Structure formats: structure tokens, C-alpha cells
Length: 584
Image 1 (cartoon, rainbow, N blue to C red):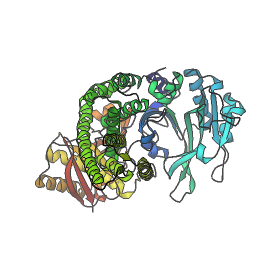
Image 2: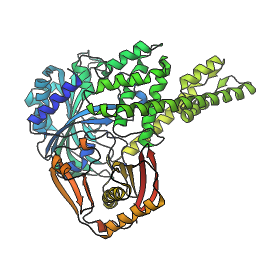
Image 3: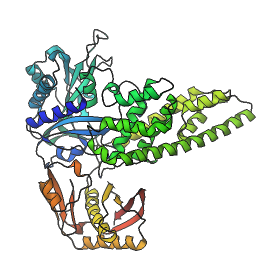
Image 4: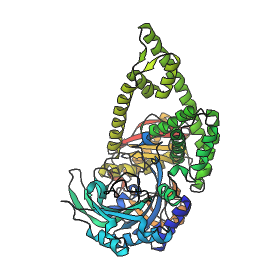
């Protein structure tokens, strides 16, 4: 069964059970600086898990495009993916454990045809914060899972929270038995031997964990589930790895034809990192040296390095991108409209990387000259690491050049430094994801409203071609990206600033409405990613100044904002400008 067929079966099944299908949010979160990327289906829904009413109701289902960056260096093995698709169904204060488990079992056995004997499950064992989940145990037993295939584990295995604080609760995880022999008499779902593969996680969110680690009950009990699409397709197709399913098979086969040297890990890295990069660029990401732009740059450069490792000409990159995109078009038809810009961004980054490698090679030659002058024959690991970190110069290339020069490389010291670098990167990523989503305190709420006023003022001063291309809000400032081809003059900036402050002085009421999407478009409401909104949408109206699709939150009147001041205007990317501003 192809991945697209599994996705469609899933959405239709839950639609039949009263769920509204909502669109996937972009992989780049809107107005959320606490996360680099959307990492789970629950991220865009946090306000609704905390009690805010969702326009589409209390039963939702979707597929969510996700990027997780903690294990980029692990990609190349038989299971790690940076980009993946998560299927989810949601209950926002509606049904709970009994119905969730019954629907999960019905979907797996009736829709996907998985035999009962292939399914094992785990439940929460209980602790001082939450009692043992005997309800889930009973539900699984009632649908037909025998007691000897129901296991209890603690928080480490059967408790879910995004980050260190936020909505959370016990979960029940569903495992697929691959049929491989048990690695020992005690082999069970918690074992990593490969016999059991987790396929679905049903989280029963009824708690909120605060910064001090204290758990309190949420206003409503929620269900949040996640089923990994690529993994499920792999299992149903009887494949050993996700790189053998139809999403990856065409590019894997092409790379095998083009390669001079046979490294399966390199083919997997190229295939995975290109797909991840395509999806990030599609949703507005561009390579840079900070945050998500750095991740994109890292993915692309790692893919290019491994093309070199396989001996594949970089002149074939455009064809390889096309093959990757063609395998994705059925699942993401929106890629077709952006095929040209996606290829352009990737090839431009390839060209920049080639220049970087040339710089790295010059630095290598300088190091060799110094070593020869001092009578040494060993290139220190810290030199190899510096070439890698500063110039993106791969260790393998340093080793190859060293061999040509008759020199040795201290790989042990390099590996130690590289491991320290990885540990720091992971810690940084964890800090970035702490808390799951950005807070929406008083200042963040004010800045949300200020972005609407800024967007409206820019249209007035620069023209109707201005459209929002991205935003980032913290408690200290707003950052707003918009379409405009030229640097703003001082006069234009002053006019925009004065206009925003005029809107604030007018103390205009900020009104919230829910309506069908088509009706909102007819009214002229503006949206950044129109495809991410469902059939029923929330729009915010600020007098005659602004009408935008938005999930909020916002102030009651513009007079609450204070004084608006532009601090900086600069280029963001081709045809896109960026304003940083504060409220005083």
C-alpha cells in the first residue's frame, strides 16, 4: 500500500467518525520563535489543547509535515528521517480513551488489514503524578488484544510532552511485530532489537506541566495521536527501510546508476536531505548562517558532500532534484508551482558550497606547508575539525588530500571534538524547543496586533504588491518579512511608522469572526498560507484598516499597543524585505 493511499484511508476513516479534515501547517511555524520547525502535529494546535475553541470543532484529523533536527548526523542508517509526515486525529474535550483506542484498533485491523496477532501495546504504569492507566489496559483487552501483549512502562516510555513544559499526559503506544525472532526471553516492545516497531501513539492530554515541574489538570481532556506515515508504508510494503518505499526508491535507483563508489549510507543521506530541503524551501525557508536557514544549509551541503563521496558529478544535481520532486508531487501537488525556485535555491547553495570547499582546500595547503616546515607528518584533529566547522570541509576530503601528500590525520582527536560539537548542537536544539511553543503573554499579544497594522501601513505607503512572507514575535520585538523589491527610503520608513502610530491613536476595536473560508476571501481577507486554513476560518478585523486570516491572540483595541518604532529595515531574501520594530 502506497503512502498516499494510507494517508487518504486515514483521513477518510476519521472523517467518517465525525472528524473535520484540517490542512497541514507549514514546516516553518508562523509567529513562533521558540521552535525552528513544526516538529509534531500538536504544535499548531496548542492553543486549542489549552481550551481555545477551534473553528472546525472538537474532532479534527490531519496530516502534518514535520522536521526534526536532533538526529541529522544519524541520517544514513536504516531508519532516521529529518522530514516525515505525521498522521493525527484529535479530540479537543470530546471523546477520550475508550473511543480513541477503539477507533485506532478498527483502523489498523479493518482499513489496513493488520492481523490482531501483529499488534502489541504499552500503557502508563503510574507514579506520584498520575495513577496507573488501567482504563487503557481494559480498553485494549476489550477490543481483543490479549493481556500478555499489553505492557506497562513508566514516564520515560509512556508519557508525552513537547519540551519541558506544556500540555501533557500518559500515552498508549501501538507496536507492530515484524515477525523477527525475539532477541531474548525478556524481549518486548521496549527492546531495540527490531522485532517490535512503534507505529502509533495515542496521548491522553489531561495535565499541564509548568516551569517548576508541577502538574495541574487542564480545562479539558484531549486526545492527541500520531502515526508515522513513512514507517507504516515501509511495514505494509514489507520493506526493511523507508528508503525502499516509492517516495525514495526512484532517487535511490538513480544515485546507484550514477555512482562511481558504492556507499548505501551516502545514497540515503542525499535522498533524505534533498526531500527535507525541498519541503523547507517550499514553505519559505532559505539557506543562511542562523537558525532554520543554517539547518537548511547544513542539509544541502551534507547532501552535496555525499554526492562527491559517491563520485557523482554535481552537474547532475538539477536532474536529481527533479527525480526527487516527481516522487513527491502526488503527495504535495503544490510543489509544481514552486519547482523553479526550489531548484534555483538548491543549485545556488551548491555553487556557494563549491567556493567554500575551494577556500577550505587553500587553508589545508597552508596547514600542510606549516607542518612540513616544522618537520611534522601528522595533521592534528583540531585542524581537521576547524576545516570542517569553519569551511564546511569534510573530514573524508581532508583525509584524502593528506594521503596524497603522504601525511597522516589524527582522526581520534577529530572524533572527540566532533562528538563535543554534536552534544552542544543537540543541547542548543533542546533549548530552542523548550516549552513547545512560544508564550502568548501580554507583549506577544500586542506584537501580534502590531504586525497587522504594519502590514496595512506598508500597503498604503509602498503599494498593494506588499504581502506578508513571514513573521517572528518575541516579548521584546516583532520581525516582519514582506514582498518588496527595493530598499525602503528613510521617508518611506517614517511614513509607515507614523501611519501605524496613527492607527494606534485611533484606538480601533479589534474584532474576531469565524466564517467559511470562501466568504472570508470574498470579503478581501488576506492570508499568508491560504492552503493551511480549513473550511471554517478565524479572521480579525481592525476597523477599515486591516482584515486578515489569523489564529490570534490580539488586543481588544489598538490603543493598548503604545508607541510603534521601526528599528531596522533590511533584505531578507530575493524580493523580500524585513522590518524589525518595537513597541515603547
